[in-house]
Length: 323
Ligand SMILES: Cc1ncc(C[n+]2csc(CCOP(=O)(O)OP(=O)(O)O)c2C)c(N)n1
Ligand SMILES: [Mg+2]
Image (cartoon, rainbow, N blue to C red; front, side, top):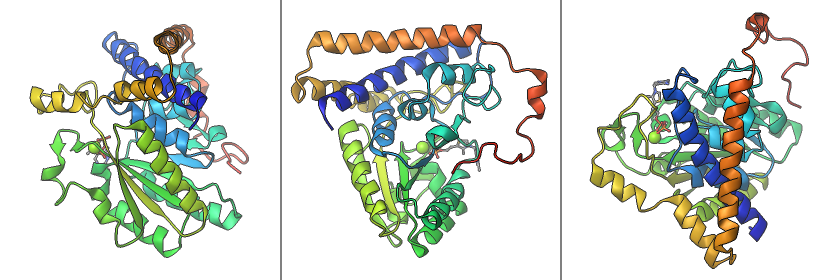
């Protein structure tokens, strides 16, 4: 990572946090409806993982606004999607959980917990057949590792030595259920150990996530088969905006917030890359401006046309085809 890349990562982290707060505010105002899962506290993980995974296909969880931004999908098109507008990245029909942009090799967002993991296995299989060496990454939560589809995917990916990076974001919660009540151990990487190489990393440390994902991508590209990376993170808000987060004590939340990924990465910028306070303030101002513009754009965008209801319902040749 060089200075420009580090500044870009910090910009995206600040952009992501400002975006999430703006989304929450607009949900409360009634401008956004449906489910809204915020990624505040996990920005370092989301940005660094996507930036480190150069090229290649990405299948993500439903908590994916910031990941989509890091894949260079326009902030305003993401906000417009949350508003359900025609200019949204999925034409206003996907909403927060279905940000889909095949031209960026970014396939959501999936509302079915763990449902996207077999899809990523299929994509990795296709890429292997095509001789494409970029690799595929699938991102999911700790809760998704308790489902059958996850274990079947580990098995198929390992048997066929597929170029697939399994990236688990372990925030120790599946909605309000603590991991201790849903799994026999905290480290979900243990579930993958019999099948493939595994790594664990501090998900609140963007630089560490970046380095681990980069290393893992290089390994899958070398053709040895899948790799599993687990990052430990902390979600600051409730599961979704309608969850009051009352099941976590103030002490637990404080313990989380001292590890703030933005603060940690800001120090990295100052100490390693010698960024001045002025440079940092200018990155932060640019991010806030982009979010304000995205909200304005979303507010002023038209609703989808009624006819759009019938588009993309049935397969049409050459539409949404990724080559
Ligand atoms: C197959 C399926 N079962 C249950 C749900 C309901 N549900 C939505 S989110 C969630 C928790 C998922 O937790 P985790 O995978 O850890 O992701 P996180 O929200 O922590 O990012 C559950 C059970 C669902 N959407 N899909
Ligand atoms: Mg979780």
